[in-house]
Length: 423
Image 1 (cartoon, one colour):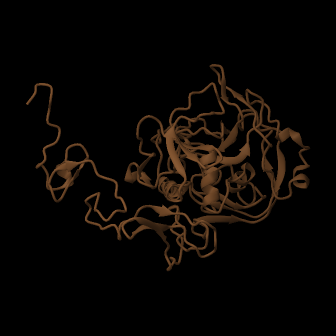
Image 2 (cartoon, helix red, strand yellow):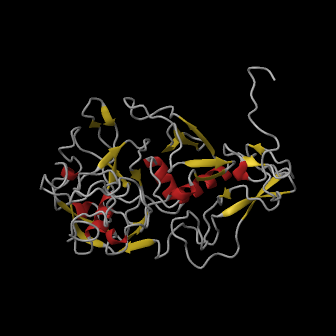
Image 3 (cartoon, helix red, strand yellow):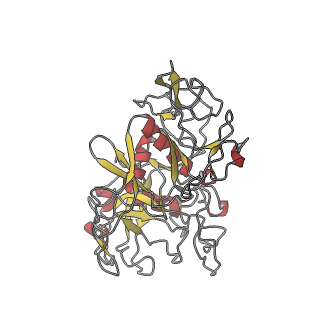
C-alpha cells in the first residue's frame, strides 16, 4: 500500500448498523458499511431496508385543492417501477392527533378539534396596553380597549414534527427547497447565515434559519421527506422560523397567525383580570419555561415539549402563552427606533378602537425600524413576537420581541389561530 493511502472502510466488517463506527448503514447482503442510498422508484432496494418499492413511502403528498374530506397525509407510492403516485387514506381517524401536522380526520384542516384548539367567544372592551411604564418598556401607552369577533387559538406551539410534515408536503408537491443565504435580506446590516428557502415560482421565501451546524431543532432531508434531525426533538416547539415560514405553515394548515389583541385575550381571560395565563400567582419554573423565575431560581434555559408544564397553561387550557418560545403575531410593530413610543396605539382615540375595528385590529400596515444599542438596525420593517421565552430574565408580560419577517431566531416560534378579523 502506498504511504499516503489509508483504508477507510472494511468491506467485511459488519452484521448490523451498530457495527458501523461513523453512522453508516450495514449492507445486509454484502456485510460492509456504506452511506445509506436514497430510495428510488426503480425496482431496486436502493437503501437495503428490505422494503420493496411498491411498499416504500416516498414522502408526504399535499392535496392540490382543499376539499373537505380530503386528507393531507397521503403518501407517495411507487407504481410500475418508475412512476410516483399520491395515495390518500380513505378511512379517516375519529379525532385529530394534536401537533403532528396531519389532517387525521380528513376535514381539510390540521389540528382543528377541541382537543387541539381553544375557542373564544366575541369580546367587548378588552384592555390593551398600559399607561404604566413599568408594565413593558414604555411603548405600551396609551391603554385602550378593543373588540374581537370569535376566534380559535391552538392550544400548543407548533412542533418540530408538525413543521417537518409541512416541509415534506412542500417537497412532495414539487416545490423547490434549498439551503443557503437569502439573496435579498430585508436587513442589510445583519448577516443572515444559512436558511431553508422555498422557491414558490414567483419569489424566494426564507422559511427557517438553519445555521452552519445541525442542532436539536433543525431538520434532516431524505428525498422529498423531512424529519427532525434528532428524533427526540419532535415534540419541542419549532423555533428559528421566519414570519414568512410561520405564516405559510398556518395557511397550509387552514389557519392563520394570531393577532396581538387575540394573544392578549387568551392571556387575560374572560374577565380580563389575569396578569399571566394561569392567573396572578408569581412566575415559577413549574409554571413558565423561562431562564430565571421570580424567586431567582434557575429554570434550565432550554426548550421543553409543547405540552410540558401543565401548571402554567391558561385556565382555558392553552400551553406556553408565556415562556418556552416567543411567538410570531400577525401584527407589524410600529414604535420609534428606541421603542419608547407606540405609534400604532396613539393612532386612534382610546375609545375609538371598537368602532374602527369591530372584529379586532390587525396592527399597523407596516413596521418601523428598531435600533441596536451597538449601532445599526435590529430590524428594518419589524414584525412582532409576544410572550417570554426560555432565555428570559425580564419577566414583564408587556415586553415584545421584534424581527424582520425574513429572519428567524432560536427563541422564536409560533402557533396558529382561526376566525377573528379577516386576514
